[in-house]
Image (cartoon, rainbow, N blue to C red):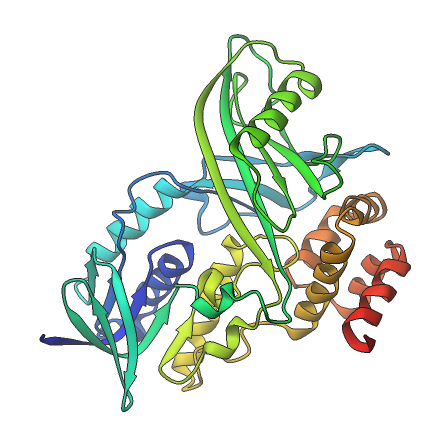
Length: 383
């Protein structure tokens, strides 16, 4: 089978792969590099909704479906209006992002998009080779978004929590929603004793996305999500008549698994497979933009693409939080409640973005009950 040579190959055209494509396109340094994109799906369906907070204008504003400057946080103890200060909470439908990215890729002749399934990746004597169901390709460096099989082993020492979710876009028969604000987290309806919440993204006065999610060791049955969504719509939103326009289901890994150890001088794991998902929250879209930019700068500086991709201080914070959620999952609700009750939203966003200072981090930490964290430290290092 003939091998076709490329400078870079990107396996998977999800958020991470497409962010990396666009970062290559935006930098003239790579205009003469031959870049391959391998994706088994056509990427035309709206299969994801990405939300993120951001200061001021952003590079994806032209793709936004909605954005909000005000929000709410609800728990059984209190409700709080969230003034987002300099931030906006932004929503992008994946179909719009896919279309934009694919148009950009098609307009640059140094890119080649192949709708093929990758069967294997091998490093044969320093010549990385990708085998698909149709061809074999060689690339100087491969960026791979496929999760390695050893992640799914159950006999290791890593925490592998899940964030399963299901959401509906509903339409009511009369004006119901306030389009100026969204519900970021609402903990008033729980799934048993698990950390679980609902959020509401108003799209118009008669349409909104309502999504239920939880931190758990396994996914729920489909009817369990439906039960909580129906309960929230009827009891909290007090809506009696509505139509379900769209449905979204997925699972986000929340883990301290060392994905970064798979990286080397010919291969970089990206996206979920590269640890790009924030382990303690599940947020990823802005991370993809940030990490793609770092990869570009590392390549230009002749460093490993994955060089200093993460701030290890925050990964350590995440590992402690995961330890709490794994052993005392029910405490997650009170931890989020304490954080939002005692801190400004802007400082919370910086903390969750891994962008705070050590001093600002300590102020956030002061708002938590210290005992769960002390117990987590003991379990992590002394047991």
